[in-house]
Image (cartoon, rainbow, N blue to C red; front, top):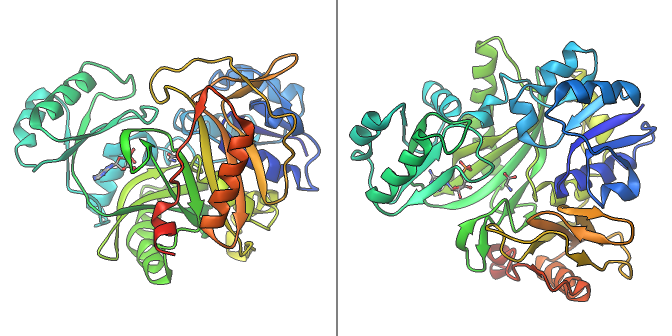
Length: 421
Ligand code: AMP
Ligand code: GLY
């Protein structure tokens, strides 16, 4: 079977490597991929949001299955489009993707099905906002309703800031959002919980914690994620039961009640407060960089997992995981998440991947001679082992060998788990 993987981040390099291990796959195509996926698959540099062009390409290369990495094509209905054209696709359809694509959609499900989440108000216009904001105490969280590439959430310390942000959203800062969601600020510890879902079943797919802030000690603006580790010790058996019964099951029931269903990876973004889980967000895909620390621990063939989901037989599947823990530190371009330069050379030739210490690519490209940076988050250095402190040491030692002058990284990834050791 030929397979295509949509996306170009560290998540896709992790998925690509794992798929490569499967004997059931003939050829893997990454659309568009990066310098990492180019080593093990064929990169096709086309715009995957141009569905017609995508279909032509898939047919040309006789691709029978498409695995979708990022949220944007899912929210825009890539799965519906591919299925209509008789190509199998792993990911949720357009309706179910609203769990990530519209914060208002997700919050209204929470209200109706009594899913624990921050109190909220959906505002359609400025008048609505002006009236509602006074009902919230500070800090308050202001969110754009639709996809905003990680830039649509601001924690506001003053009402003035909240007004300014909402004004920008109403004025069309994000094409995807005409509404603003005001949310109560939740305190606690964040964690991410993952599932693979089919029409009738779901199966747990591990836990992780990432670090969203750009600077050490959780300072500075939010990023896509500066590093992550798995498993997340805060998600113990007792908490897991609560997540399933209070959040996951009611959400899947809500879709069923609308005569809809979910298929694909489901990422449950949580705030844990007094041992109780609150839903912060759903993502309709694997996390990035969470995927890079979960997939390397999975022993089961990923294509088997995907096929069981496509056949609605996840209830018959048992996943096998390595006992080892896993961490990744993201090496970013200086300036990220603000402006940064692209095209700087990264010398990796002398560095050989090992089973327990390896590099996944994200914002990289290969020109004739060199690997060059092409994004904000550039490389993920991943390592596995028994002890997070030792794992982090190994990763930092390797980053020092890379010695890329235009890059930076956080040295304190995993501080929560390392402090507790
Ligand atoms: P979201 O895109 O909804 O996940 O929000 C991005 C990040 O903003 C989350 O990972 C949290 O760190 C933070 N955040 C979002 N909503 C809240 C909330 N209600 N209370 C506290 N922090 C929040
Ligand atoms: N690391 C957060 C995300 O993938 O959305």
